[in-house]
Amino acid sequence: MSQTFDIIIENIGQLLTMDHEEGPLKGEKMKELPLIENAAVGIKNGIVEWVGKHEEATNFSAGERVDAKGQLVSPGLVDPHTHLVFGGSREHEMALKQQGVPYLEILKQGGGILSTVKSTRETSEEDLYQKAKFHLDRILSYGVTTVEAKSGYGLDRETELKQLRVAKKLNENHVADVVSTFLGAHAIPPEFKGRSDEFLQEMLGMLDQIEKEELAEFVDIFCETGVFTVEQSRQFLLKAKEKGFDVKIHADEIDPLGGTEMAAEIGAVSGEHLVGASDEGIKKLSQSDTIAVLLPGTCFYLAKGKYAKARQMLEEGVAVALSTDFNPGSSPTENIQLIMNLAALQLKMTPEEIWNSVTVNSAYAINRGDVAGKIAVGRKADLVLWDAPNYHYLPYHYGVNHVNTVWKAGKVAF
Ligand code: NIG
Ligand code: FE
Figure (tube, protein in one colour):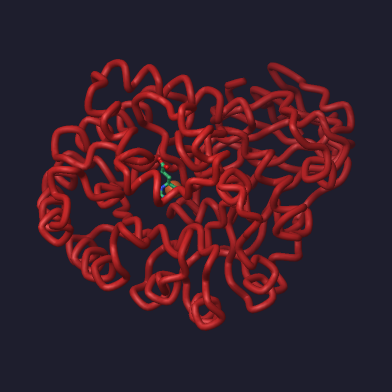
């Protein structure tokens, strides 16, 4: 054999190839974790060209040989739900939280999301770009190579477009892949107070421009008490679908309104949060192709001791993904590894389920199942070498960054 690679990563203790059959994982598949022990990977021109046993790697030459020292290698992780682009921050709300003022009450008083809307409207596109880039660098540093980014802190045409353009530019200029979602229906801005239907019309009126400038692939809405009802959300998302967008929904995050059922009924790509999902909602999800994106970091940070019923979802055959929900209010963290710890401790997910949820299923939750979340010949070489002896280690050892090296398309990115 005379094959030459740009890079060979060898002496890998466990290589999580995640090379399942195509499609989101549910039921028994969630318990399986395709891996190779004592493995090696050959990369050329940014693509995985060979995957095999360490012993076989000696047959190949390479521009660079990386000794993984028996440690763990996985695909670059996928974070399918973030609010990456925003102005300001909300540390001033911590005291209110500690006094027990509920999240939706802070919003009702014009704080919360609306406080970030004010800051985002006041921040220039260039400053928003630099700030989002800072957070994206940090997300990448935790082993994530593909990220979804939602707008939703403009709530007017100009600022929503500004946020979406920042996400698009990041996708073009940053090594990470950024998948953009229009969340204009994130809250009702003061100028539309009491006129939520009119506001939704206004946001729907932006879709042609968003399509023309290719600014988003998905449309999302915050279906919640005091924000948008299930029926408003259903009509809004169905109109977005008619326009050719795929849809996502923030559903049953705080109050159980029935957004989970609706997500399954309208064929949303994902239903997100789902903390208050009913038994009926979980059943409908299991019979649908909608992926449940669970965000235990948000539950931790809202500190009400209530988490999504992940075990019930998994046992009933729902496809589950995990994400940070990185945002300045309900989940200010870029650390997907912390989410993996919370999934173990609070959602009672197994290590196999957790890894499937941050790779394959999170990729499918943003329509990237065919390009991200797997290490296979012919795929882009998005890989992470972890300072960890096996895959059980990450959900166990919490609060620190276990990344040793991140490769994005075969280049060291962190
Ligand atoms: O996913 N709930 C709505 N959106 C975000 C929070 C946004 C914010 O508080 O700024 C979430 O929790
Ligand atoms: Fe969110």
